Image (cartoon, rainbow, N blue to C red):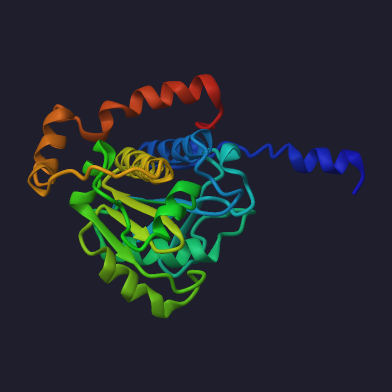
Length: 262
């Protein structure tokens, strides 16, 4: 490949499709692209692997990352629309990660409240997912997660249809899923909710890894305190839920990773 061809490949120049989709779809695209950029900004990405999806309301289709783009390259217009069988619904020059389709399609199909599904292979998340006791009740971050946490055992790369019913059954109605030996997954009624849930999940794993490295006796939160989590989390967010922090996160992206909304 000559230098000019390489430069053209590096300059993606993806045209905007804003005029071709509804305002509702465009807003979802912008928020989903923002989530990808934020995952990269926080260092939770794994090259071009892992995935975040958002379902388009009133359809059986969802948006997923173009396979081969780094998360900090993803834009609203580059996201690929696919159906529950993995077929592209709209024209795109990009492929789709088959493991991303396997995991996300079955959750979107089974959980109608799972408008966004976010999956990471962060080092802290994988480290804790490999510990037999899973997430320990040792931090306020974990307090935010444990009230709605489930586990799914490792079955290799998520490529087999046979794994889908077990994954769905293990997730149940939880918002947080620890994929053993694999990573973390969150679901939300919005992109903002799934991202904020992952922020709590990742932080709880980071604290656990550091606390265990200290080789000192750990103080676990009393179960009676853990039972207060759901109500207290609703109270502290003052009825705004995940949208309390989301506008500020978008402003951070405008400063640090502009162009996600193109």
